[in-house]
Image (tube, rainbow, N blue to C red):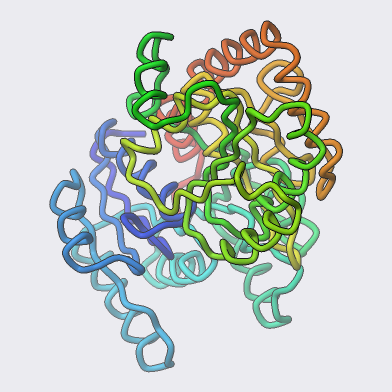
Amino acid sequence: MTKKTKVLIISTEFPPSPGGIGSHAFSISKEFTEIGYDLIVAAEQNYSSETIINQFNSNLDFKLERMKATPSLTLLLWKLLNLIKLISRSQSSIIIGTGKHAAWFAYLTARLTLKKCVLIGHGTEFTIQMSKRSKRINKWVYSHADGLIFVSEYTKNQAEKTGVKNNNSIVIHNGADSKKFSTLDNEAISKISKELGITDQFNIITVGSVTARKGQEWVIRALPHLIIEYPQIHYYCAGLPTIEKELCSLATKLGVMNHVHFLGAVEHDELLKRLQTSHLFIMSSVVVQGDFEGFGIAVIEAALCGVPAIVSRNSGVYESILEGKSGLAVEEKCDQEIAKAIKFFIDNPKERELMSKQARERALSEYTWKHQITKYDQFFDSIPSN
């Protein structure tokens, strides 16, 4: 792609607000800027204070136009008009939509302004619980975009089940930032473990909102199978505590509450310390009313910290590991399989150390954002001019 290509990214969410789609939008925006794109992002920023949002935005290396939610037809038309003005003012030649409603806006504004339209499919856009109207719009929009990028083969397959068929589509897995996630030597790990009060433990961690879909429940259900033989196991959940009360009740009922810790949404520095002092990462994701995990960015971030993973096979998160090399896979909602996999990692420290090394090597060689962004760039080059 010729440098200084002008691009507009429309996203349903954006940091510092939580959410995988927003995190993805921020990551590709940063990488596009670094390779020379002239970039503008139009996105909603919710669930954070204005002070935090303004501080975050002041450090961006690209332009950001904040959008408001559109709960009414009037506001929807107002947003559409503002996006068209933004495209005209910025002279963007490619409009990227990420997130369902953002994709709809991107497609419509691209068609009205005769620009290229590239959409990104994560997973939530193709759930079977969509209304008939949403399915019809989705089918048309994602099928007729000039380019369609899926974050996993699983997401692509699910989209096709809803009728989406685009002849110019590609799978580009998500990446992670190797500058922000890294390993430490044993001495440094020991020091941080003492600071956190987690020495002489086998530390397991899940990063992501505490929800039914992320599957923290099934790790908790696995603990009673383990703690009598392995009392040193402790499970840490980092992320918005959406269903923390319910899971605390479950852990108490199962007699494992002393082994379960909810950290809430943590800042990056603390998250990094938690990952670097963990022995094992788990994302035992569950399909909930058709909603599934598109990919496992958090699995790759853990791998960059030298932490192997246990993931469930039922969604795109399975593609974030190389089974038997960087982690193990288990069936959905199967606490006994999870317990068995955890037991393997505890009983086989040499194999765990090897998987740790292989997970990091794989993440560095294939799954950094710098590596993935070249695939985006090459894909954009392959799209015919309108």
